[in-house]
Amino acid sequence: MRRGIACSSGDYIFKLDADLEFTDGWLLKAVNLLENEFDLGVLGLIDYRRYDPSDVRFHEVFDRGDCLVVKDLVSSAYGFTRETYNTAGDSMRHDGWHLALQKAGYKLLIKDVVNNFGFGKSIYVGADGKAVDMDHEALTF
Image (tube, rainbow, N blue to C red; front, side):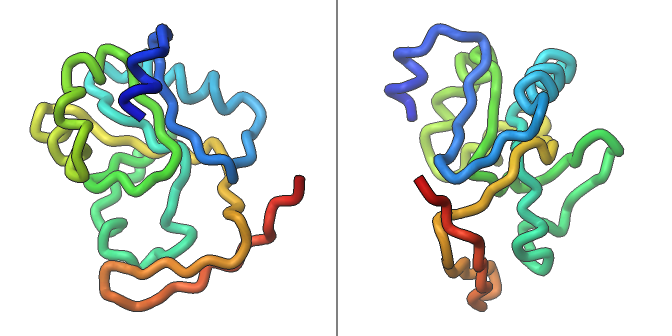
């Protein structure tokens, strides 16, 4: 991802998976939040609680109405500004990057603006070690 960011020139950076369905206006909604939230570090584009609401990583969630404020960003699709990356990019190079952003004073938000279908049947192992069956319809090409 770092190489792709280095080659890009835009003000907004999005990490997107191949198994997403984009809803109408998703990019405008995401960019509006990134522009207007002065302390926003990362915007997650999928609310993963629908996969496993019992996962302990989803317990510290504050519903703000227009989006969720979260402690632990669990997302395979997210966006941030180049300014955030330039400020905190070194901390975004390891697994605890979302915690490093929070320590630097940034917020983590989730706005459910895309759908994730997955590439067929998959198993997710929750924080408690139990497997959660995530059976999605496979994408066809």
